View: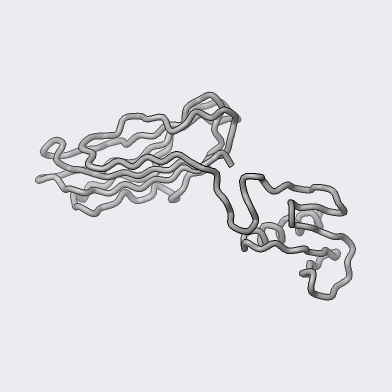
Amino acid sequence: MRKLFLAFLVAVILLGGGQIFRVVAQANTFCAANLTCTVTALWNFSGGLQSNGLNVADVSSAQTLTNKTIPAGVVSDLTAQTANVSLATLVTPAANGFYRFSGYIVETTAAATSSTLPAINIAYTDADSSVAQSFNMTSTNASNTAGTVGNPASTPNYYFYAKSGVAIRWQTLNYLSNPASAMQFAVHVRLEGPF
């Protein structure tokens, strides 16, 4: 088990660097194929993680080791918005799947008195629990200044495992403007997957 864990750790490091290596394992030592060391097992990363010819972990057909291909996604780019964006469907998954959502929002025109840039919100149903989930990607911002962006609520990307047959949707929440509809914003969202 320790060898398998160490091999997995090396695989993550090597694959994350965009390189394809043939790695050999010794009890607690890993060596690149061009270095001298005693070999007790052979690990091959060229088509997935293999040990002695058996697949330990496959590499997804949607990804390559050299250029990290990402599955095609859904794009929504809106400008000159003067109210919250209503709940909109990005995709309805045909099968349970792992997705990545990202968003960017910026105030383009300030209101005369005050305004609040809305938050970007993602809504989906978790595939494992069948419970509806809702998450704000960005926080609201009341600075009332053109060029102000919605700061990420936690990370710039949100990863989740969505249930098949239930729409993945997005919206903006908490738009405020005084005078009404004077503040304008642009919003750009991306949904990538399934991975």
